[in-house]
Image (cartoon, rainbow, N blue to C red; front, side):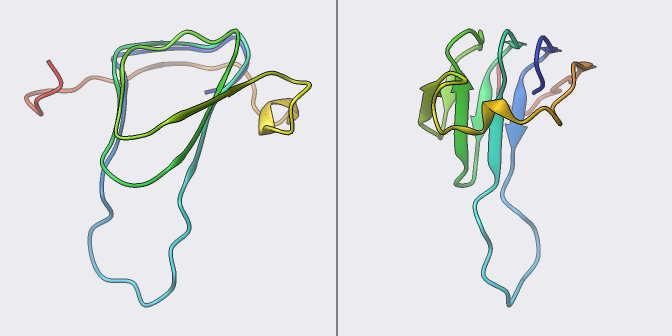
Length: 96
């Protein structure tokens, strides 16, 4: 989630479907500076979760957040993450 972005409805990462013969790396999830996630962050698979110190999120389940800021070695300094607005809706999947 990019700098100054706002996500409503939460975020959910599910287990991958199918079989892969290659070794899978854990996805990296970054909640950037001044970002806001209104809703739960639910992870059904291993992830590396970085949450900037100025970010606001709902409850986090299934992952442990690494807090930090731009002075850390965390990936927050990357300027590729541009502000976006997204609406994600969950329907009947038990996130209530």
